[in-house]
Image 1 (spheres, rainbow, N blue to C red):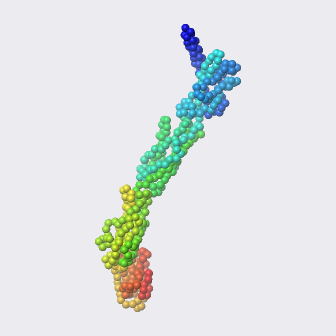
Image 2 (cartoon, rainbow, N blue to C red):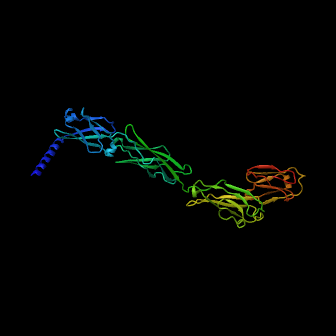
Amino acid sequence: METDGWVRMWLLLCACLWATSLGQIVYTVSEEMDKGTVVGNIAKDLKIGVHELESRMFQIVSGSSKKYFEVNMKTGALFVNERVDREEVCEHSQRCVVNVEALAQNPHNLYRIEINVLDVNDNAPRFLDSAISMNITEDASPGERFHLPVAEDADVGSNSLKDYRLSTNEYFSIDVQSGEPTVSVELVLQKALDREKQSAISLVLTALDGGKPQKTGTLHITIHVIDVNDNKPVFNKPLYKVKIRENIAVGAKIISLTATDLDEGTNSELVYSFFGRANAKTDGLFTVIPETGDIVVKNQIDHEETPAIELRVQARDKGSPPRMSVIFLLSLIGLIAAKCCGSEGGLSRYSDPVVTTHPDGSWSYSKATQQYDVCFSSDTLKSDVVVFPSPFPPADAELISINGGDTFSRTQTLPSSGKVRL
C-alpha cells in the first residue's frame, strides 16, 4: 500500500508539471550575436513579476553542455550567454532551433522555450583545394566536358552557394547545374587546343553565395595540354646542295641534315634514313647516321660514272603512329665537270672572257671564253657553271663557280692569268 501511495503522488506531480508546461514561448535571434544581447523579456512573457524571480529560484535549464542563454534576475531579460554558431549547433539544417526550459519553484512550473537561430552570411564558399591541375590532350574535341570540384558553403538559404564564374579565356566555358543540396559545375571545351601554341592554360573558378554582401571562394586551375603526334618533322632547308671531290675519303662527312618536330617527348625524337632507292650506280655510295642526320661517304666516288647524285632523305618521328617529313631532295654536285667545251691556244691573244648565267638555268659566254674550257656539273642545275683555264685541265687549276651563290643571274669576268682562282 505504501508503494502504491508513492506512485500516485509521483503521477500527480508529473501531471501538475505537464499542465504548467503546455505553454511555449518562441524567440528569434541571429547567430553570432555578442554576449549580453537581449533576446526577449521572459518574465513579462511568462507573466511572472520581476520581484518573484529570485524568490522562486527562476532558472534556465539547457539540454546541452553549453548554456547559450541566461536570465537577468533583476530585469527578467533573456540574453545571450554564449555566442551561438548556427553551423556548429545545427550544421546544414535549414531550420535551426535551440530548445531550453525555464524552471520556477513555489509553485513548481516548467516552461518550454524555443529559440530560432537565424543564419547570417558568416561563411564564404570554400574549395577543398585551393589549386588543381588537369591534363587534357590537344586532340580533345570542342564540346567535351570535364568535371570540376564543387565548393562548399556552411551557410543556408539565401546565404548558401548559388553560382560559379570562370575567368575570361578563349578555350573554355562552364556549365553550372543548380540542384539540392549542391550546385555542380563542368568545364566545357569551346575551341580546339594546340599544345605547340599554348602548352598550359591558367583559369580561375569563382564560387559565389547569395548573401549581402556576397562572399566568394576561388579555385586556381592549370590545364596541361598533353601532346599528340600531330606534327610532321620539318627540315630547316627545302633543298640541300654540297660539292665534293671525286677522290674524297671513305668515312668523310659531307653534310649534316637537320629537321625539327614541334611535338614533345617521343613524338619529337627523329630518325633519319634514305627514302627509296636512287639508282644502281649511286646505291651504296653514302650512308646516313639515323640519330644525327650526318651523310657519310661509304664507297669511292667516280665522277665519270656518277657526275651528279640525287638522294632523297626522310626524317621520321617516334610517335605512335609515326609521322614522316615531306620528302626532301639532296643534290650532290660538282664532281668535276659533266660537260665541257674546250679550246686551244693561250690567254694572251684575247681579251678577258665573260661567262653569264640566266634565270632559266642556261649560260652563255663571250668569244674570248673560247680560250677556256667551260663546264657545268649537271643538266638539272645548269646554272652551276665551272670554268677551267686552257689547256684542260691543268693539274693545279681551281674551279670558278659562276653561280656559286645560287643566284638566278650573275656575270663574272674571268682573269687573264694561267691559274684561275675563285
